[in-house]
Image (cartoon, rainbow, N blue to C red; front, side):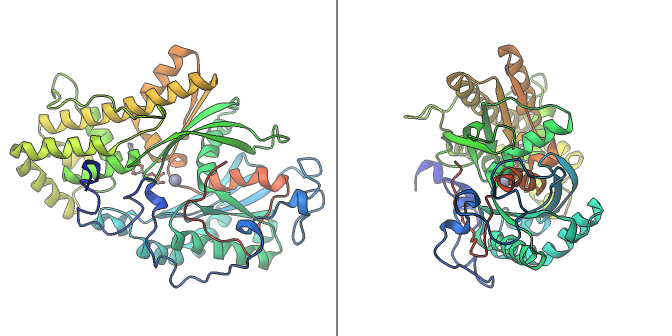
Length: 447
Ligand code: KG4
Ligand code: ZN
């Protein structure tokens, strides 16, 4: 087992999205069971290019002729997201205005396993999907018939989870006679940054560099307007770099686990790091910048996680407080106010130093990418983009360089369906709709 693998598969954790080069791309066999796979072969990924081949059922006149022209204003798209452990539905108008966004989190179910359990996730999606969609419609004040299209996440993600949303979306679209649009989850995360900007009446300028940083992904893209769709919100992507091992959120979750701080790790470590000021918590260890041979824009976080593990193992004085925190968390006492007094100055310093290292690597490489691509705009999205230090450092660095940086707010940072509905709009206006053969793709590439 390589050094970076130290925590993988060794922590009594059931199989889940965590654990591979692409985290959630690594899907355990059997996750499909119990969900009907309605694949008809012949059409690539079940997605038809409506512009080239024409669109048959359910697409309004004018849409199949291509871009914007002929597409009425006020296009209402229902987005459905079920790629991991959040069942979400939302209605977004014209890819910009959020009418409703409902998210049912499964964190309480997966918490005791320290990670997402695919079988449990699929089952919970099945339970939640109908009430979550109904709630999204109710909050938007709409009837199903008033929708213009249904958008579903096709991948990447856990196959069994994705299939619940896809099967439901297909059925709904067919019953209503409305078009179905397939969305790449990562395209959704990029649109989350745009959605946030639109709510504040701003429009991020393209080209941009986008960092998507979550529990399943840490990846850098160059984002441009897709040819021929200057303002429809359809983007073209070039991958610039990605993590070679753990995603940054995965590193947060594993470090929190080894420190007895529960799951998920990001939010609590974020707050504990903020409580560690240089005056009260000197770093007990130093973690330097991570070097990656080859592509300088690639990331690596497993070495850092292992360095924290070794530091803790070499210092038995942590053992007692870790055990006490584990007991507290197991008993449901996991709030920041309850855990803070149970952390020594050394623990706070260690958490701060870990976060400094993660933030430094994420920011440095993104700034380097922005310089190489000569862009004026940086977009940061995904669960870890909620991190307060990451936001502060990005804002400061971008200001110093005269760049604009956009983050979704916290609700749009983590998985949600508003970003899926927003991402679908560009495809909808270009007539790129899916048919009944649409299938889940665990590792769907972007661009
Ligand atoms: O985007 P997301 O909801 O789901 C995935 O696609 O993975 O991201 C969840 C991840 C978890 O690993 C969680 O620990 C991390 O985002 N996270 C944070 C913060 N809030 C959530 N990481 C650092 N700081 C935070 N404030
Ligand atoms: Zn995500």
